[in-house]
Amino acid sequence: MSEQLPTLGVWGPGERDKSGVARYITQSLPHLAPHFTTRRIAGPGVDPAAFDHVLYHLGNNALHHSAFRALAARPGTVLLHEYNNLNYYYEAWNQLPAAEQQAVLARVSAVVGTRLDTRAAMERYFADHPHVDRYSLNARIEDRAIEAATRVLVHSPLLAEHLADRHPAADIRHLPFPVRPLTPVADTRARHGLPARAFVFATFGFLGAYKRVPVILDAWRNWTDRPADALLLLAGESRDGLTVPDDTTVRHTGYLTDAEFDALLLAADCGIQLRGPWLGETSGPASALIAHRRPTILSDIPGMHPRRLEEIHLTVGQGDSERADLVAAMRTQYHRHCTPAAYDPAFSWPVWGEHIAAALTGDPR
Image 1 (cartoon, rainbow, N blue to C red):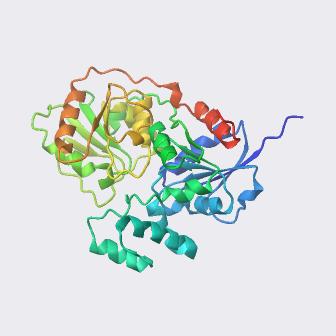
Image 2 (tube, rainbow, N blue to C red; image 1 turned 90 degrees about the vertical axis):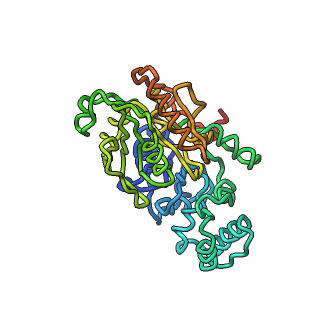
Image 3 (cartoon, helix red, strand yellow; image 1 turned 60 degrees about the vertical axis):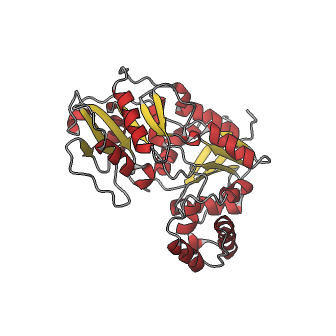
């Protein structure tokens, strides 16, 4: 008779939620199956004590509310998809216990230097101080999850080092960001109206100000010696009221199926995945580009990189020179010798499965 596998409860967004973490969980389940009998939970009503092991996927919106509540009920392994989760607390405010609301108010009060006793007082403060970015405040809000967890997993080795410095008593580990190997799909460019011989720069995912899309568009317009065959592709659904300019060299796909999204990742010549503000997340599209050794331009934020960068990966800082530096980086990538995509198996889901099984069962490796 075969040995019975230990049970694992996995909390996070549901299968049908429009969420990168939801897709991540869906893709992860087959790689947990050799190690655990797994159940996915996306809502209330399931006792985490019913499982041998638990895994809480924590992100930065109310889709993760059940995971945060289950963590409060039973300590366990946490996967921080973003470590600054202030927006989760803002969105889920009315579902939080009063003591937790007060704890969040105390953290925000400390970082802004003003006593805020109520949600209304906090909202008034932000309305009166529009220069304060309420979402990226360094309120150390991650303390709440880290202190409740038995161990903490993050996707960047440098972020793991940063959090370990902040929390020396915590068990914080780097978990390689998983990327399945992609295969080029014939006629991808033709399906999206992209000339076969064009040099395509592309930014992927939900398109909003936090991904520096307005900065990318400004830099594109101000690239005075831009080659005639260069195109900018905005691959994803727009956010934050983004308006795409009426420019034949800028193409916007709108929302993409997973299959089309993946096909375009390999069809582009260079990815541009910027961030600002950064909330502790690792970029899924950037990881996919890096895993397939595609030329990429990233923000100079080491903690958002899934590993140390290679020569084909350029970075730009934020500040007065960001646009000029981005133009220079695009110029460099345009003139780089093109090489075919090559997958790095260090990003594979089976490697991820071995790492996370060790973390969940307490293996020190």
